[in-house]
Amino acid sequence: MLNYKKSVTVTGGSYIDGVQAEGYSATINSDNPEDITFSSWQTDKALYKANRAQCRKDSNEFEDIVYALQDEMISEKMAAETQGE
Image (cartoon, rainbow, N blue to C red; front, side, top):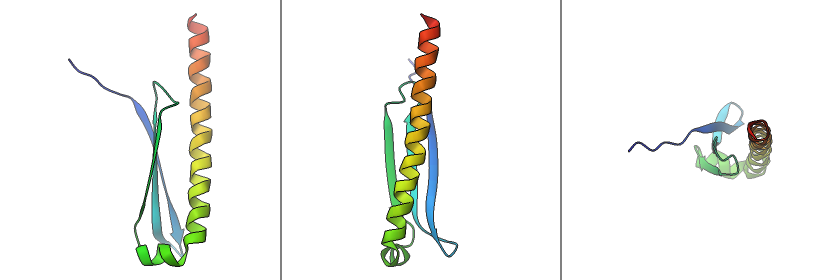
């Protein structure tokens, strides 16, 4: 039996002078928007280390964007469920 999951993936990155220092990804389960997974990775470790404060700021901004999208998805799901009652 086929089992599948629909999701939304958001990606971003922290760039210093046009070079990516760190990458970000978040996946939100479309069927259950409360289910969210974040990941991050350094693409240039030396650049990341020299610019940790900026990377942290960018990471926090990325999370804020993803949480706003998650809130929107939760609201849409609740509205759809209310209409279906």
